[in-house]
Length: 112
Length: 117
Image (cartoon, rainbow over all chains, first blue to last red; front, top):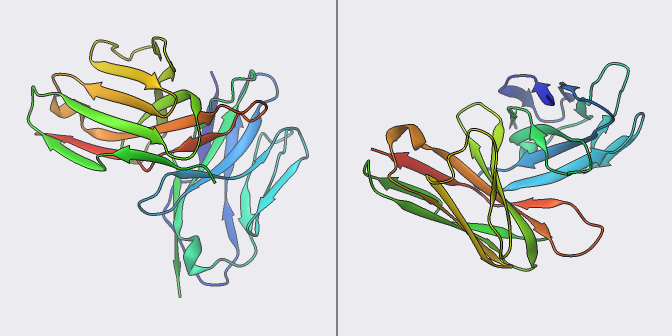
């Protein structure tokens, strides 16, 4: 079945550092890929998505590129801020269901 | 953006009692609502999908008689954990899919932390 593997956290960075959170997936067919973010005390929010190979999703300075050859969708940001501290979930949805299969989440802590 | 609320945010109950969790879409109508369960440091696991006015569809391994789902209106779904036991302690998250055509995005609630003593 479909599955998502993302790096374990927490990831701890200083403000303005470069961020990478790795995500790889296993799926039949050609899934859509997502990154969700959960700020403390809030629900999950869709951060960005990509629906086909080589697509790049981007939002709020975050980017991720759909790499079919490596089945990856790594999240990157060039310069993180304290306000980016949150838990980030990689997810996929296949078969047109749009019901995501989630990874375990990676906690990001950004220090001033 | 669309807002989904859950109530309560935290609940502690005694073993054997039942607990009801509400999920509301505040500024949109939801044809479909989803209930997830999340264990510490693990993925969100889909428990069930509910469509307004019809019975919920449960994922394999989820006991429908233990986790009762009611989706009585386009803005409210409830999850009742019946005869709760300590192993039911978990973080329960709902999401809602908007009624508007062409938009399959789910909007998530903030979650409910259930602790069964």
